[in-house]
Length: 147
Image 1 (cartoon, rainbow, N blue to C red):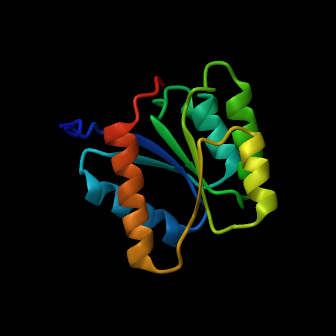
Image 2: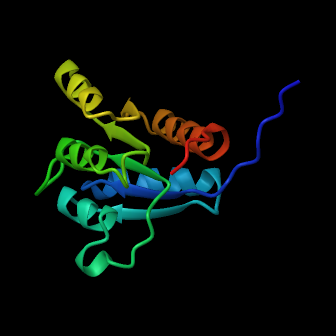
């Protein structure tokens, strides 16, 4: 019988400009495992600075997982995704698009830029919380891709 591996703590970069969505996502991840650590970028430019360790973020730790909204100020989520997946040092970093957009155009564009997953935020809080808990469980327990 297959037994589930233990949960490992995750460092998640949450790229989200909406304060309410960011708070709900953070609470759900930390409720899943209090060892999870969430760093938030409020726009695409800040996300790129964090990921490429530029400027004020030169000493920033690289995350284990990126949760990326598409509709961001300054630099769009798709542009962030394109830069991450084009960089050899960051290419293997899992990027999960977490957005309100369920348009085929956005899903196709995210796929073309090699998003590891595309999730549409449910409007219902209980469903959103369950989705984030399952997402945390998958990446913290089951995924074994190298970062």
